[in-house]
Amino acid sequence: MKYLLVVLLVIVILIISVTLGAHNEQVVTFNFLVAKGDYALSTLLAVLFGGGFLLGWLVSGLFYLRLRLRLGRAERQIKRLQQTDSSASAGNPSATMIPSSNKE
Image 1 (tube, rainbow, N blue to C red):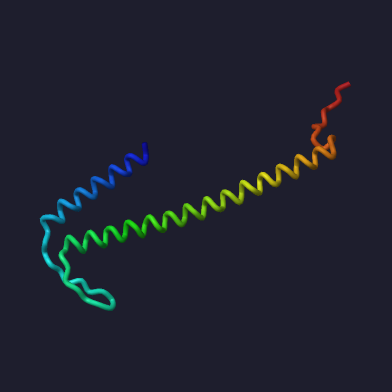
Image 2 (cartoon, rainbow, N blue to C red):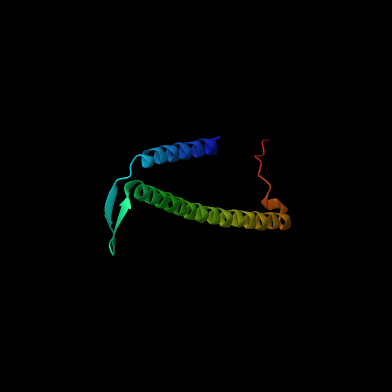
């Protein structure tokens, strides 16, 4: 459901951008650090918005991938510790017994 809302939000933003861009054909001069160019304002806005969107997804994806790798390592470590615990308790059955209080 959450993904559906995100997709709908992106579609709405895209429709609004196309609508505004279709009526805005003003030419502007965009000065890069190394070059200078004349572009239609709608094209410039669309390219910069798309570039920012892709950059945001890339950064988010890298953080997500890093967390997934960290989670996988933690799960393997937990599994390894559980195996060593079960093998240690199999060799020494009194290690797993909980001492009971003797009431006489």
